[in-house]
Structure formats: C-alpha cells, structure tokens
Amino acid sequence: MALVTFTNPEYRDKTVYAVAGSHTQTLLKLARENKIPIQFECEDGDCGTCLIKVSSIDKKNQRMGGPLTEKEKTILKQAGKVTAAELEAMIVDDLPCEWRLACQMIVRDEDIRVEY
Figure (cartoon, rainbow, N blue to C red):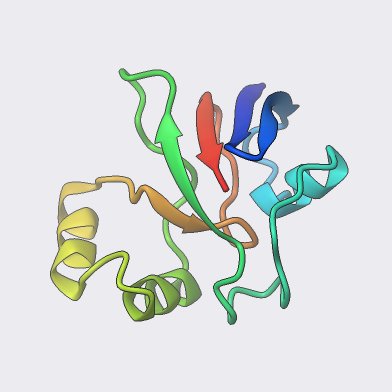
C-alpha cells in the first residue's frame, strides 16, 4: 500500500491509501474516488488540465510513479515544465519527473505528496 497526500492551499490536506502497481488506477482516478478536486477535462493526457507536482515523502525511494508516457512528455514540454534535454537526462539517469499528469500517472509502492 502506498500513502498519497493531496495538498492544495485552498483545501485541507488529505492522505489516502492507494493500491500500488495496479497498472490501471491512475492518480486522477484515485483522487476522484476520494473526492479530491483535481481539475481535469479529457482524462486522456491530451489537454494538460490535470497537471500536478509530485514529490516523494520517503527520501530514500524517489521513483514517484511509473515512467512518463509519451503524452505526458509532449504536454510537459508544451507547458514549459521540462525541456527535451531534461527528459533525455531523466531517461538516461532513471530520474523521476516532479511534474506529471494525474490522468497518466500510475502509483507505485511509495509514499508521495501531490500538489494540485
């Protein structure tokens, strides 16, 4: 089980349990099931509305979800959150990306903080 803490200045922090590695439950689905008001439109990774910032609570284990999808890479570059060089470095060095799309991110077995 993973603990996911959703945080937003307009709402009180809420921590929920997530089934890690389900390969089907996205962070957006988890948020919706727990009435976390993350904005979204397409739910398919095309619009970028569900952009979130993710950080690891456990500093020893900083994977922060599954790898970026191709849709995430495109949207994050368009939004100016990452550069092509940064994406390449993340792939080569197996580094996590702090910016994700909630509709694309699959939770792993790790405790994370999600700013929305």
